[in-house]
Image (cartoon, rainbow, N blue to C red; front, side, top):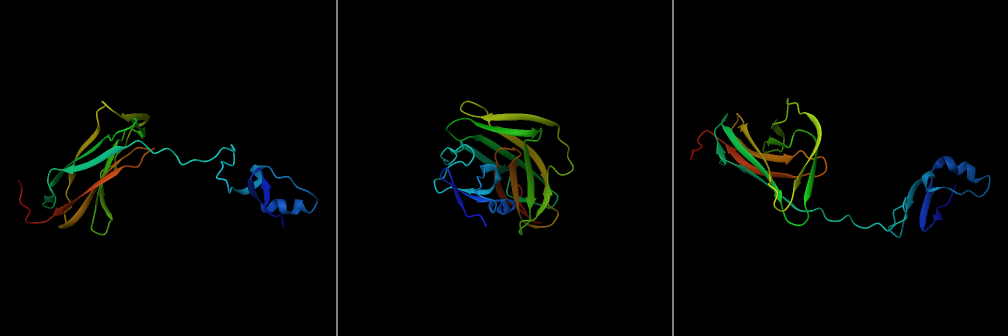
Length: 181
């Protein structure tokens, strides 16, 4: 069996198919033939550069608001998801469709009982929204149906961006004796 071999500061663990070749004599394995490159020096195994932590992502603020916290079954929940710049460099949100946001209602167990995007089609298009100083926030407003069963629910609003995961949530109550403003 081949032993771990040093490879420019890395430990190369060869793939099993090369073990038989080692019996024929010395074997030099390129990095591509290794099952794993393990570095005690935290170096990128392909480029050989030191690996650093990725730079912190610029901040974005996500806020979900509803017109009230209590509803009667079948009522309309007016929700607004706002994504704004949180300071620092501009934030770029990349989208693969025309969908910008999604909303879902979860029951007390965390099970999704309703999702806004279900049974909807979105145009396939690459686009981006940039959040930065002096730029307007991304705002999504929707009217959602309150569940038909009384109980406590969680409304989750999320950004449909492919490069950043951003969500916000609020709790709402559906009951039979909810006072309206």
